[in-house]
Image: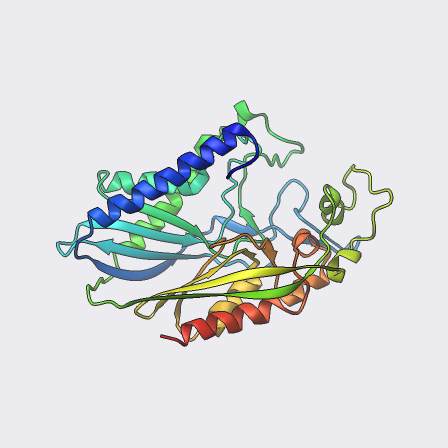
Length: 333
């Protein structure tokens, strides 16, 4: 991060330095280890796209709730456990499809690890500070927490002092951590593993995205913003724009496939990738090695949803390219 607010630049440089230091420390401490994989489930996420039959329109949130339990939702908690030959925990990798925005809007002025940070602290604390816990996002493009501090079901926003943001963040983190620890307790590890990796870039035709604030109009027909002179939301489905690169990556740990995509996959697309994978143990790792924005499945473009109007990718490319691209990478091993 070379430009922008000085505080943001300084923070970016601090994070980059810490990452380099962490890698150096890990290399220096390299030792024999065993690894294993397992899955559980957590009901902390929910689809946020809601259709209102009264006006034939898709909303970003059902008013004051932000939940739609009738739409697809992947509850899978994927866990990788790394331990010493003696059985002592070294690290835990947890993947779950949920935006880290439990704290968004309540204590939004602070830099926070949100529920993933709370999850990591809890797991690391359970190990007596001897282990490291890492979280990555699955297919969360159309998902939000089932509870969120800024949503007041009585209407309006809750003041920060009343929202008790850290309580909810820690609750989400502990619930996810407890499920991960339960899964880890049943994982059988092995030291005889093969590691392989590959990546590629696919390019999709781009489309015009909605102007600032206009996505709110598309997702909230009654949102009080001016839309004078702006095209219909339909114009943002297929209007041609600059092409978009999507970086795909695969890290194979024996027959465990960590499938990385440089964007926010919507749930239907993530589930399609899993179904199409040649490996039953496939983990979708979103926001990996790039920022391609929202990536809907083709059918999602039929909706005037927030994701389909703000994506930079035209219909008919991403779904096929991601599935075929990841399968091609996996077939190399």
